[in-house]
Image (cartoon, rainbow, N blue to C red; front, side, top):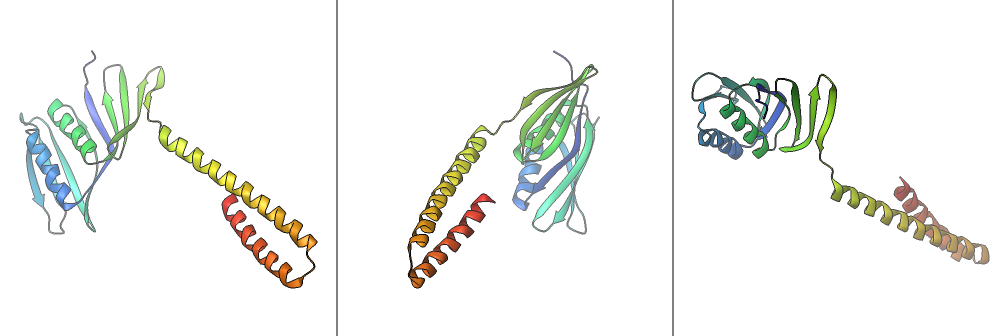
Length: 196
């Protein structure tokens, strides 16, 4: 098995509430990562994470934005302990990131959205190859089902419009024609909305 040389986080973004921030700090304690938490004057937090051997550190700056702490970071990690802790944090706290896991002859590029891997691409000298891509099959089926319901409703409205037009052509009473015209106007608006 190939040995990973480094892991790069490209524009990783975490958005945490106060409660999640405490859990985030606890997660690194559980992973036995040394940390220093600095609370800045403006309410921002700076978290310095260091592996046990002291060979590697990463600084995470969380800016206070309304009710959230938001961290956007790009960093390169080599040590496995800090790398694994960051992977767990991005996943557990629904982070968005592009993570490059660098090996000697290729790079595996992971695309995270809300803590889940949506796509994995293997990049090498010979080009890029998609290894995994999340397909929202249930969501796609739901959208198809909804579109068929709308098509069915459009068909029903078209039939009702045709019946009303036939009735209008046969009616001579002005009051009745007025009611039919009102109903046709309503159905036309509904049809316009559904077709949009």
